[in-house]
Length: 179
Image 1 (cartoon, rainbow, N blue to C red):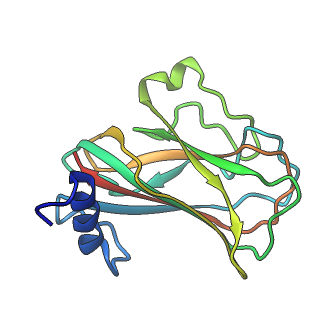
Image 2 (spheres, helix red, strand yellow; image 1 turned 180 degrees about the vertical axis):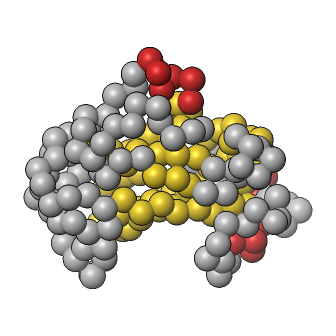
């Protein structure tokens, strides 16, 4: 490992830490994995609409708070076919539950009351049909975010395409390293 580029060393270390883990790794202080499930209603969604309201990504960082680097994302849709018009998704991230409390199927917006807690977005990509599931993964990300005390982030899942989804769960997973 000594002759490998820094990123390769970090990713291999993160893989060793997170291999087989189904819970956040807050006890290591190094690697963190957290998921949130969004389940939209089977109603028409416009482009830029929120799916199922805000959700919590518990322990995506150290419980004392601090900087993390989000390195990977995964989006799994528990459906067996891509819906007509279903394109890509974005996760909008916050340090607290967004004060605007935008509801399911509302157009995503960054109102003035949300600005202080907003930490940016991550494009999750376009899901691909892998048989009985739809899936997309982004690797090699380097998005640095300050996680508040408690170690959690909050997010809105936003669809980038207009379509009518099935009421299938969409599970977003964030993987991060202490910065």
